[in-house]
Amino acid sequence: MDIDIKGIVIICGNYGSGKTETAINLAATRKRDGIDVKIADLDLVNPYFRTREAKISLEAMGIEVVLPDKQYMHADLPILTPAVAGMIQQPSELTILDAGGDDVGVTVLAALEDHLSKKKVQMLQVINRFRPFTDDVKGCVRIKEEIEATSKIKITGLVSNANLIDETTPEHIYKGYDLLTAVSEATGIKIEFITACSHLIPQLELDRFTCPVLEINRQLNFPWKQFNP
Image (cartoon, rainbow, N blue to C red; front, side, top):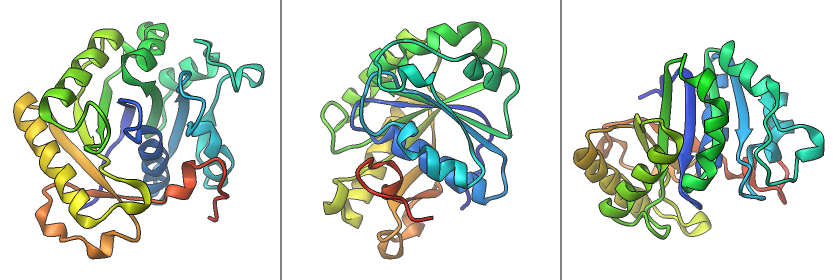
């Protein structure tokens, strides 16, 4: 199954969920599908693993990357460039907004409320079963409600990014999918896709999933590694 996501898509989740990694790889995958893609880094909370760390590799693929002004590149301040508002006003086929973690991280969306309220927006909650606070349905729903209350935007889709980095096995992917299914049943929110590292995909029983699998290249978002396109 292919991932057929278009429009304005906000990627959110709790700290350590892998939302930025998901956003970067979703952008790369859809660009390879022939879709025009833009991505904005709205993560003004976490100093690591931001979309901006993959700017060079994304732009090499022809993906437009919008970042805070240069003087604020390493600042944790709620400062947005007019380019972000412009991206929302004139979106590409897929426009991805990489928001910060937890409810604190999505407070920046309030600054874009006037622009977002005039557009159809999807907001995807990325869940890593193996992170604190999202290892059961109750925790995932609590994070969801906190994000919605702060951002004033409803979660429209769920994504499982179940992993233990280099120790991840197919069984971890299956367990993440099972939790996502339970969260979907509890909330009525649809499952958009799950993720898996490229080296694990050949080992997975793909017929176990009723959703697409996004291939993850983890080199994209580790600032101490170089990306090899």
